[in-house]
Length: 395
Ligand SMILES: [Zn+2]
Image (cartoon, rainbow, N blue to C red; front, side, top):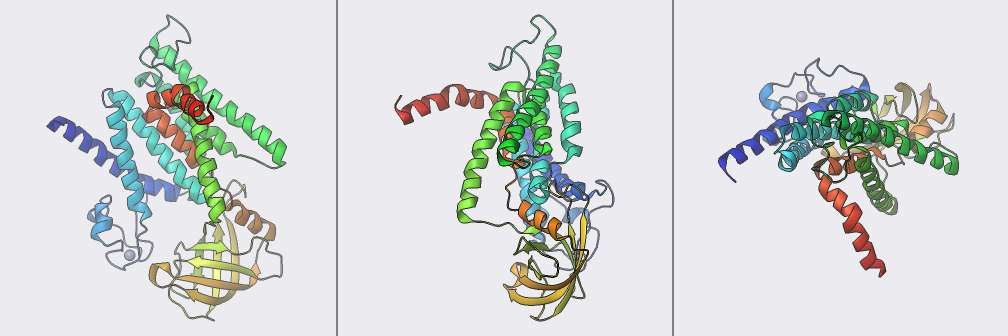
């Protein structure tokens, strides 16, 4: 590696780290309908604005020992991980496509959007329209700037209008990619809904594959879908076997116990909450408190595609039935004895929705691989996998 290569790679990595820092803001604020630009980030514990030298990607988190400088509220490892992931993805985009700046920038921006979409889908079971819809339009219009839709150099694209300008062919390729991506998921969705007799896949996934198709074109968007399905089946199977239940992210405002406004993670231990019956919760990341302490909880269920509406507010009363763990790992088991505005059916739907594994992150993984390594993915799908399958099944 010569000096200029190291310099360019460093620029890509650092740009990615800074974009990742912004993505943390997007992932938190976008699904909550908050402004992305204002106000500046503040500590959720003490409300103090975060100064620039405490906001340097990854390094500040390490230097501060994962705690707020002033009030020592823990800062989740998720923040530096998103920054690091985005940094590495920008570096990979540069390594894969650095020979053509337009392609490298297109792929890097696409990967950044996928990171935000994946984490929002994990947290809220929503693929935000605010990213996928403008993404489709922008990336179709920007198609002539990258080589992802260029014919000739890449084996899987073709001249849709032979003899026409390359820019026109790129626009058509991107547009067809978006349309085919949406159509395929709509078809799978219709078949799944017909078989399962309930909504099999969200419209968010339709727009996500359309977005991926706009970036990588029709054929690669299908490869992306195949990779997403295999990834989802493998990881989903493993999670099903180990029976992992994710705690649901709820904004829990536990009054009178020093936990106001903290975004604790709640986990319903029962999915069926009937009116007049106790509802039980596990509260993760809870502050110190004695067993038997009465609690008043305001619970906000974030909007999800399952609830199909805005944030739902619940007011609960009860007591701490047990405390497990210490420090950051402390967990309360709450016994809820009274509740107002509790729409039992809605809570049950919300709880059940968190048993599902979101498909968005797997589609995003497929899209990312196709954008970063189109040649390799194409080779694998047309030659590598078929020959592997022939060896495996002796045919
Ligand atoms: Zn603080």
